[in-house]
Length: 618
Image (cartoon, rainbow, N blue to C red; front, side, top):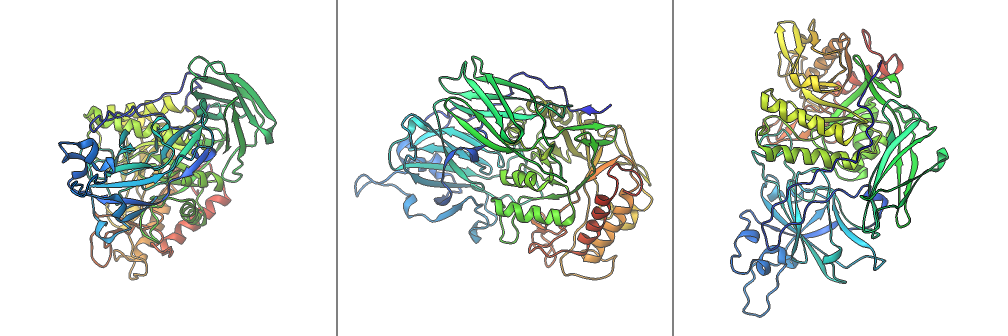
């Protein structure tokens, strides 16, 4: 019988509140649960040029000991008299584009790690005097402190997940100013920690929106098929506002003839449970429905797909049928122009290359990518592995580190819980086993299942040799997972490509295996013998032998080789070859296909035309 993720639980959704520091002129407000589906609301974009001050010593926060509320950069102070001393001026300072990282916008900031202050002015955009206003940030790397008109709204830690604050009571009709202190310094206790293999892009890397909402509004909702059912919808709606109790909540899916009502309880929570005859989402048929949720005061629409997920032994079942994940890993980077990818056009280009490769699956490594990546993947029919940056040597014994990791996992799931494309929540990558690490990761797995019992949980593990020819995956964390991921670099970090010949793989569990990383580097256009490192021929030979090895793994349920496109990394300095780029991409930064691209493309074409149930010859 299939192993479903977990039985549906109708309990209220788990909400994890981020911890906020209280330093500054006023105490930071508690972090708020996310407002779901910002694109389905009445919005005003704050994207564009923001005035900025580079502040490596953090003078704008710490050095104004006498009148910090007036003279800190967050106050946007102006001299009151010609004799008044104010040593900064946003309005005379240079600009940075938002969304965007600061590293790629100014050469002097390429390697910069520290604080930059952002300031943007705006008028109250509300069309109704009775409505509420929120400021919604797509992401700020890594730590952000936010002020409106000199009053502190709060803080957020984590460089890749969204956060929002209500600003209704702090607004004035005109000339409001929003100030954000963004600090991208790496921290031992941070998530990720000090050492990573990607560029530490700082700034307001994703869009900033003002959301206008009614007094009582739909803050969050979950609408998906109940685990194990193809025709039963199960979910919930959470209302926010003074009239949230006893409200009628309507669910409509017009194209499927679905109309359903529920009533909110005293906390504004309404459970949804109903039968529905729906065409299921799949890579071959990425069907989405317009879903409408409405109350007396609010209405939200979203395009949502519906599908079922389960495992049976070493197989992943999509809509009850085995599916093989023909994948590729990718970073949220736009190397053709340099810097973070952040818009829908960037997502379409990256995912279009994945589709051209023959992929039906993408691993969005090693952190939550922007919401357009996930939405476009769903539209294109690409399944998604979504991950948080619990990466390498996290500070496992530090309670604060776990809280930050759990907070990022919560925000990722709150944002994408209605995306059918997301089939795997990943709680980490290449984390070395220890008792502290196992407890840390186990609690993250439990958190993911409490937040969303409709998906499978995974992590990218490592393997060990039993003997010269036998590789075993037996990391104790695998016992906690629905799907086991494994990173292996046979032929690159582990011997030469020929070493893959004759290797035998074993696993400690009867569970699906996704080979989450494999590959090797090549400089596009560099040619030579197949045994010469960094040539396209070496990478091509590595992929040929990897494909032959992977075909023989009977419990293999998919793979996501490393990586689609070359990406920037400060750990890769080799002159003339790397030049601070990780060259493991199947495409160059400009999109030129290396020879290995066609090896994998050929196998994926073969897999797409044959059985997806695994075994010899997949």
